[in-house]
Picture 1 (cartoon, rainbow, N blue to C red):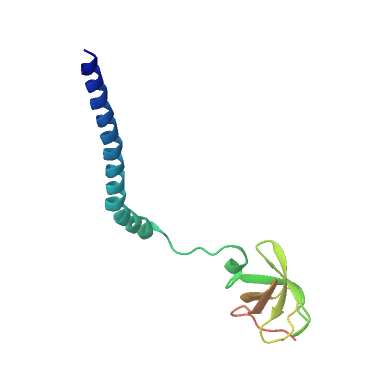
Picture 2 (picture 1 turned 180 degrees about the vertical axis):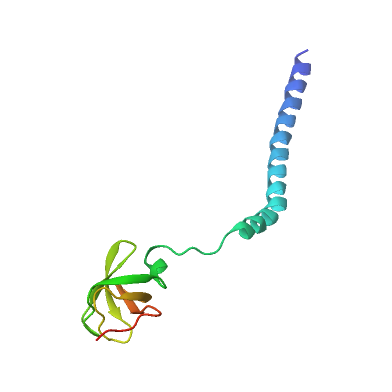
Length: 122
């Protein structure tokens, strides 16, 4: 009778080892089969690149709140409710109250030009 129970225990031990091995094989096979289609599905769902922070300001219109005096005399523009130091691209002065368009960012300074349709006032 003791040999019978030892045989049953040995059988259960073998089944247990095979179960773990089977589980591992199924998991690895599942990853190998599903990975490529899943990645292509997720990459296809990705929307366009969304800019945020300072990079998102490029192309937006801002209002000059402190006049820009010249090529080295920074003024300030208000964009998205915040005031940013600004210089003009061509170095010309711009009066307060003028609409400008952000064309570049140099360190923490916005580089602007007159917004389309805005005429420069002397």
